[in-house]
Amino acid sequence: MSAPVLDIRHLRTSFGGAKARVAAVDDVSFQIGRGEIFGLVGESGCGKSATCRSIIRLFAGARATIESGQILFEGRDLAPLREAELTDIRGAAISMIFQDPMTALNPTMKIGQQIAEVLKRHQALSRSAPRARVLELLAEVGVPNPAGRIDSYPHEFSGGMRQRVLIAIALACRPKLLIADEPTTALDVTVQDQILKLILRLRREIGTSVLLVTHDLGVVAQSCDRVAVMYAGRIVETGTVRQLFARPSHPYTRALIAALPSTGSRRPLTPIGGAPPSLTAPPTGCRFHPRCAVAFEACAQVLPPAVAVEDGHSSACLRAADGP
Picture 1 (cartoon, rainbow, N blue to C red):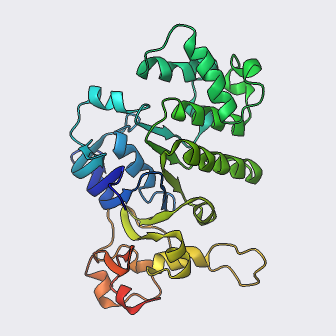
Picture 2: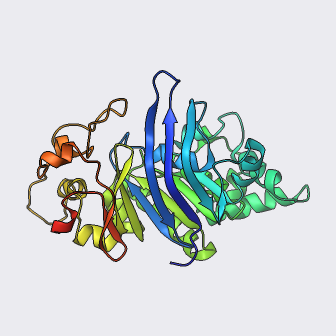
């Protein structure tokens, strides 16, 4: 890989007050290359969204602290930056698509105004230029009849169309990194497919790198180049999509794949027993060991480091050397 657009090193982010802090992101490291779609996958509550929000330090009012680690964006560490410096980066060099398009959009503002706000904040444009550019963006993301919809309010759009508006806002300044946090949540299957194809097309056309967050392995298989699997605040496996689906190493990754429906297959689905641990009091050793079918005594005592199982493929499991 050439120099990565994003290089996260040993990131630790905690939430809560001094008496009760929760490390939602605990020693997380990964890289995203230029023009790459990198998937971050795991069950709800595993720390995926907290990782994304840590990158641009956008915590929606939550009491959060980046305790340690580096967030290197094109070689510049974002973690120690002041708010004013981050404001210049958000929406321009790094953009984010949020989970819920209805709450992410301002219901009292026309969608054209909301897209134009980003352009006015980050680009020197003439008075008439923003509207023309907004029309281009709406057409680019597949909103039909942009001239007739530019003055509509969010409630006048369907869920899929609102998501397209969010993508238009995120891509307005041609960012180098797009963070897509569950961009297809609550959308029907047909619209999900359209949104994913749109992200893939825009990545191809403008070369934006994408961090795609999802709990859906089917979305990962369809869209991503590489993927990291996250469990209870930690990365447990990283590799190419082909490596993880063909040769999953970590028991949690294998369990996720076993629970994935397979078209045309008669094999029964195998649910993962138990429930993810509370991050307020995570288990000792490997955090997956209470639910792991192949755990042994040391798993409850040793927090396993990530080790290479093949070129570009690592796993944080004491049995990683044993192979699949």
